Picture (cartoon, rainbow, N blue to C red):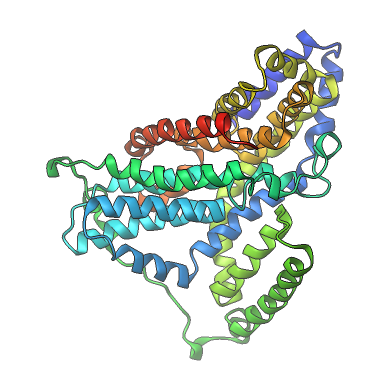
Length: 429
């Protein structure tokens, strides 16, 4: 929140110095943009809570427990946690955050019960490192935003289908390479000296205890309890949702946007949670992580408003044009996106702040808008390994501290950075 305030002040000062708008005009620009991202903010909240509800459903939890029993040694355990988290993050970033955390905790617990020593902080870091795939996946904010009708950049770039961003040859190759590189990087960092291994019990002995799920006995249920614990209600709503989802993809093809992605995860989560009360509890828990999105997005929109309505966006875009050519532009975009992410730790918020600038520069250079959007997306997810904003949920579940995982995630930042830069330089959009 403080960074959102700081960026607001910086943008205001730049507007005074570089544009013809005075203080009051800039305040008017700020307010004009303030409410332009409300629907987008709600879509971002839904991605998080629907992913959380899906990750904590009984069938997913049981799957995690079964997977946790597979590794026979520490290296395989670390590899499995990172790979599972990376796949889950590619599917949905809200799902990936929670699955990575639950996977790290369950693998650590299973290792303790089977007398296999596993370095628990590295398991937690592996669960978070998998988050490096999210913005090139099915819930990527920038690509899905630009495929959704009425988005705030539509006048500048129109609608861009995900076939040209998420499912472009470049993104497919980069995503596949990351699915191999991230787990290998994490596995190679495993301590070989047993005296250096900090197990899950060393972090918190209570983590090896099974969580108890309290359920009301049917004989104690009043009518209201019976309704909210009814599987039939969830199944009927789920069936209606599935009918629409099948119709959508049958008639429109694999045309992803923010709305259909959220709808799919909403319906699947309702079905897998089993009852309405289970789903509400899961969503309520996941909604705690939405506070930052809810309160910060209006300020990001205000920053966007000052940039757009004062003409500041065109001036800053011109700076990038001066220092870039068609070869270096995507790399500069990626690096600048990584820097911006340290201050705006939200993919959606970052698109609002940085998107107009980079799109304007791309138009001037006659550079691919698709590749520009993916460069922003990669930079945003890249420095999450340094900015622990989205790790808060994982740290809460694993009971690790940020300082215990950040050394490992910094190594993942370096190796993934090489993948992103080479992909942007060598692969077609």
